[in-house]
Image (tube, rainbow, N blue to C red; front, side, top):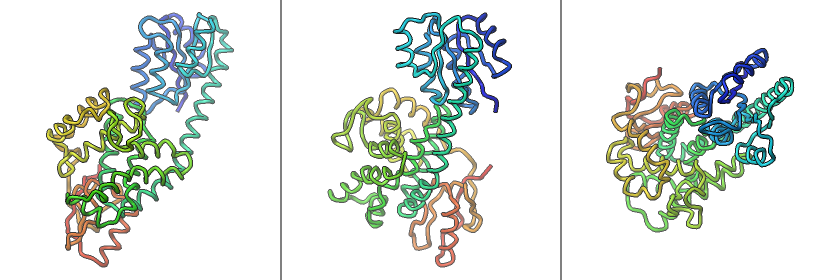
Length: 386
């Protein structure tokens, strides 16, 4: 895909001139002002056609260059940001660098060859950042997958919940036009890891809604710390470990850990995870309903007041029924990638895999091996593929 450069300026004559000067080397997309630029970036994020570089004028009506680049950074953190301005005073440069996190600072009038060289450096920086991230994600995927598979076998109910939350996250990122939140997605996949040390009998007791003793409750309450300690041993997953550690921390300072941060000091991904996790726990039988959100409203002080209404409004669209048609299949016909919509159980009632789990190749192999020894309740309801 050809590298795209977003050029932002309120002067359409300058935009036309830059397009003529640079179009032989780059695909130039003009934006007349900050608002138009942010709309283009949001649309590019949704379509997965990101801009490699954003070159922005400083002095513009409405959103100035610093505010535009600051918001652009939130929408598309990988896009390399540059500033072009006629105001060359030192404080302007300092503010632009500190608040807009810019890569280059150009003053008007800027010679075309200098600007071209700067944009080429920006494109190289963009490729360096994205290549490093892609390599990291691919390298870590194997490690994460192993942990997820082990945790899923230990607690299939929690694994089903984690799958559901990841689906909700994908919906939220699409609706909010947010960049892909890789760290949160990995944290959601690893949610069951914190409970690997809890005895299966105690897990079953909790999932069946039986009352727990104070000691048993403490095991579940401390599971975020167990998750953090396990995940923090994987290189470059420190942000994921911190999200898992703060998954139960309320915006009002309630919840685990008792001495943890509160309000906006809690990382955004942890604040979002808290809302998603509590929504799943409030959903009767795993299905969203108006009653789900009424239960959450009663404790809304625990949630980010800016984030909660948006998440609530988005997830309410699912309350009338989940996406995709349901079909029933025998166990032997299940395929990797399908979403199980009903619990997979043995005829003696033992739970093997919880509803709302996406089947992995390892899980399919395990089910087929178990089928050689045990009898399953069939057919199994799944979401039709395609």
